[in-house]
Amino acid sequence: MSLRIFVPRDTSAIACGADAVAAKINSEAVDRGVDVVVVRNGSRGLCWLEPLVEVDMGEGRYGFGPIEVDDVAGLFECGFARDGGHPKAVGLVEEIDWLKNQNRQCFSRNGITDPLSLDDYRALGGWRGLENALLMAPDEIVHSITESGLRGRGGAAFPCGIKWKTVLDQSAEQKYIVCNADEGDSGTFSDRMVMEGDPYRLIEGMLIAGIAVGADKGYIYLRSEYPLAERILFEAIKRARHGGWIGNNIQGSGRDFDIELRLGAGAYICGEETSLLESLEGRRGEVRFKPPLPAIEGLFGKPTVINNVISLASVPDILIHGADWYRGMGMGRSRGTLPIQLTGNIRRGGLIELAFGVSLRELLEDYGGGSASGRPIRAVQVGGPLGAYLPESQFDTPIDYEAFIAIDAMLGHGGIVVFDDSVDMAEQARFAMGFCAIESCGKCTPCRIGSTRGVEVIDHIRGGVDADANKVLLKSLCETMLHGSLCALGGMTPLPVLSALKHFPEDFEIRRPKVS
Image (tube, rainbow, N blue to C red; front, side):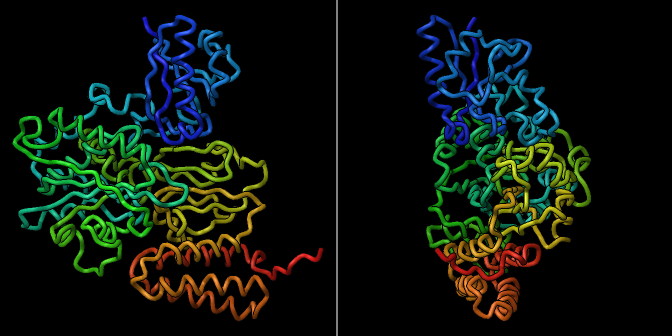
């Protein structure tokens, strides 16, 4: 019998050498006359152990990591011993506390299957949500999503059921489902992991959305910086179409739904839904005025559901287990689970899926294990480059949309970037303004001009030029951007700036050049 060895085919694992490790395992097996089958699975999200090599021992999969090419010969010499015969053995993977203590729902298959195998997907519950949806009336599906409490996971946290109901109620002959896969926030990678590690889950979610609102066409708008996700999605769509899961007369149901994959061109602003639509239609990515809402006049002027990858990937399980099951997880108005991405200066970074309610401190200490540098954690930025910088005094805040709003922050897409006590928070505030200046679409003055002036004002403060007056000016400028910008790029850039001013004022003191 062949020895089944799993080596992740995931961008993070490949960046750490997974392709070379897989090639070395194959060549080493040939040299030693050992019969092995190397399966390129998705990542389980334990980025600190990548490449995580797993071997199927019948009663479970035992892991070794992080594995380098020079470690491979030792794996064969110890016979991939499950008893810890190798210095990088981590034991039964499912029993690793970091993974065992999570609530894996959206990521239940990640790292377990061959992402492109339709048989694997089917064997682990795939298509069951779609099959249930095909037996339901459209308004029943929408009601189930509404009752579940699912909110958009892209950052705005708008209730998915309301958006779907709006599109369902439109009488247009043509409607669309658009998946926003333009995952551009710093410290985020959950969308990528779904697309690379469980692509049929996303396809199934889009199919259910289409059936629910009466759409027969879907588009995935993928950021160009994800070439591996592009290849995997393209192949997954091809195989799903060949298997009768998308296209005309899905599984003999009489329902039609097809999907096209489209690539962005690197513009951060195209993560904003109306800019994304402009780009999809072949124009420059630029924010549209609202109203009309995309749910009424969206892609090509037709009613359109726009949800991000995690939102759509959460849908199949709701159709399998029911709205009450999903709503039973979480706290307050934040229901279900959130894939949290822990990055930056952290010992154990990766993807952590938990029900809403866990605190930042638990994530940083229990899962993250403290900073990678060993120094105290001074600040975290949650929600991407437009998120507030939170000091240690706010680390007990629960992961909950409303709890973050209450402290003038946002949860966003669930990305957490960690900084130790060597960070210069004034420099981080300057970066926020500079980022906005570079990425602004230029349509509105507060964003286009305000961000450029913001960089200049921060430089004046740090250089001791009328520092007190310029701090007042900076706060006034932030208020203008907050209330006058057309979209969240200009409207939320003030969050990291104002939070840095509030919580780390000492970093904005005069920086005089050192005398040599």
